[in-house]
Image (cartoon, rainbow, N blue to C red; front, side, top):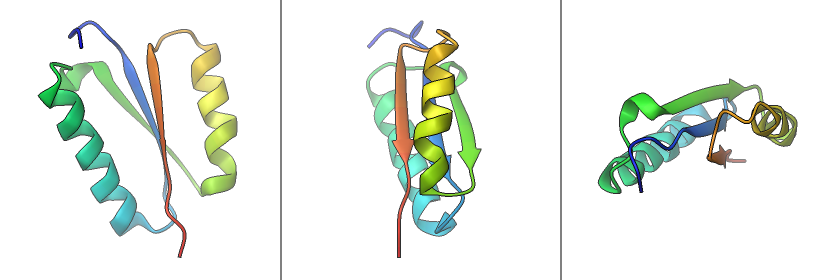
Length: 74
């Protein structure tokens, strides 16, 4: 993976303890594959229902080569 790739992480605030671990694991994996932390942007949403809407808006911005959506239920 190139350091120039811009990656967006869209993550829910619901079940925050678990989602924070998912975010950190995603960042760690991206960094292990040569993606700089500066090229990763994180967008937080209320819950799972907002994930697809914000992921779509982020994609429509055409600023990112990849989007990761993270959420966790009960």
